[in-house]
Amino acid sequence: MTSQIKGPALFLAQFAGDEPPFNSLESIIKWAASLGYKGIQIPTFDTRLFNLDLAAESEAYCDEVKGICKDAGVAITDLSTHLQGQLVAVNPAYDLVFDAFAPNHCKKNPQKRQAWAVDQVKKAAVVSNRLGLTTSVSFTGSLAFPYLYPWPQRPDGLIEETFTELGKRWIPILNEYRDNGVTVGFEIHPGEDVFDGATYEMFVDATQNHDCALINYDPSHFLLQQMDYLAFIDIYHDRINAFHVKDAEFNPDGRQGVYSGYQPWVNRAGRFRSLGDGQVDFAAIFSKLTQYGYDSWAVLEWECCIKSAEQGASEGAPFIASHLIESPKTAFDDFAGGERDPETISSMLGLSK
Image (cartoon, rainbow, N blue to C red; front, side, top):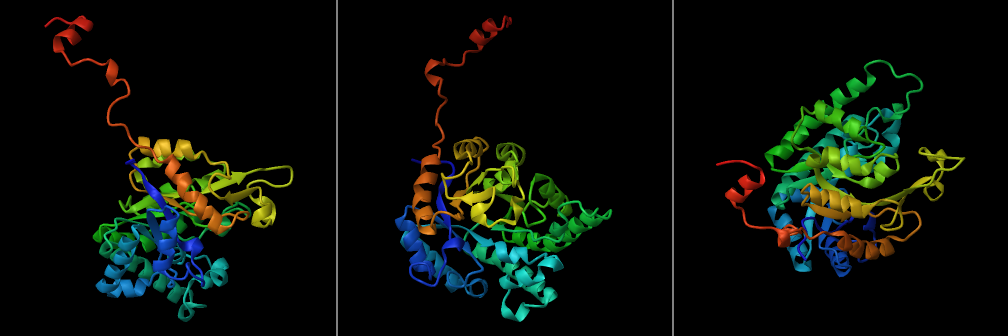
């Protein structure tokens, strides 16, 4: 079957580890291929799997990576700079926790950490080009998220200045991507300043409607905000360049709702689930994306507090495969059609020639 949407593919970030087969790119790709995955999304922030700095310096290393994937029969879907993108913009309230994403020489130095992050994300544009890729995925980072709830009252101009600053930081990065023929799919994600459609539009305005500032569509984040994730596709389909296939469920009760009461993931009203175990209507999503011409990858991003990663990965490939749609080559009612005849058409409409 040839489907318009490519897949299934697997985001490797949640599976990287210190034990085989999860501790090297070659072994983890072979493992993914054995489960039925045809593509892999590579995290550029885990050197056990991929060395972004080396790739930016060495064509030979990029060729080696391409060869490893080709030998396993797996394509690279795109590179992920989620963690580096997060560090492009960090509110001081999060300095200590986000230092965990930075190398030791940048810790406790927000300016140095940001400069490193910008350099990393720009390198990923160059490396994507070397690998023959046209898309990438990332986060926008966040300056205003601690002020998400409007209490205490936000001072006038706080949000406007947030997005003005985000634009200043991201436009030069996005220009680097444009120069390399690559787009960035920003994952719209709580914790980032771009966490829904309204904030995405503010970001697009701040980046001067940059043609590389696109969307990594992940319905789980919309379900947990109680957004209409199908209507989101209707509105923004022409900006979607990547797709994370991730499930979630939302079960509010008399004790907690969207904010989930500071509970651990397993006890939250809203939580991520393995594919098929949550409430996301993937049949409708794949139909809409196919309808609007999305032809890139369907990539499993596995996150679940109940099921193991290995089981989630093994179930994820056939789940995605079963949702891929082979577009029709002819209209379903062609059997009842007739040849075009101008005279007949004029007669049917009561027109004289």
